[in-house]
Image 1 (spheres, helix red, strand yellow):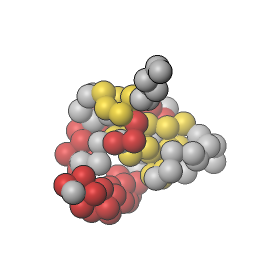
Image 2 (image 1 turned 135 degrees about the vertical axis):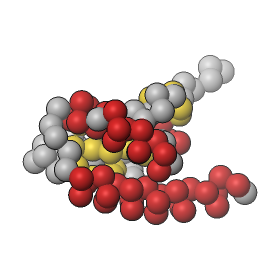
Image 3 (image 1 turned 120 degrees about the vertical axis):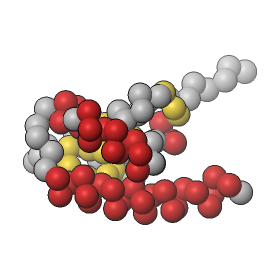
Image 4 (image 1 turned 30 degrees about the vertical axis):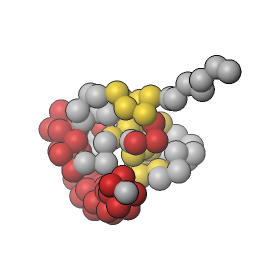
Length: 98
């Protein structure tokens, strides 16, 4: 039986390719609102980040989100993303170490 292909995506911070389930999707909705998409099903333009604040910092420094979403990203959005990533990291870590 053929093995099912695991979808991979590239982190916009560290540029490493990882399975889609290990990454956090950041989405720009058609209305222009930018948020984290925990399920991966929200409509809009998506970009992927490792659940690591260092990757978010690299993405911010390189203006990777601005390039992906083709619009300026306010500092408040980065602050909100950092807080949400910290929450996601807390949820992911206990399951990953078990």
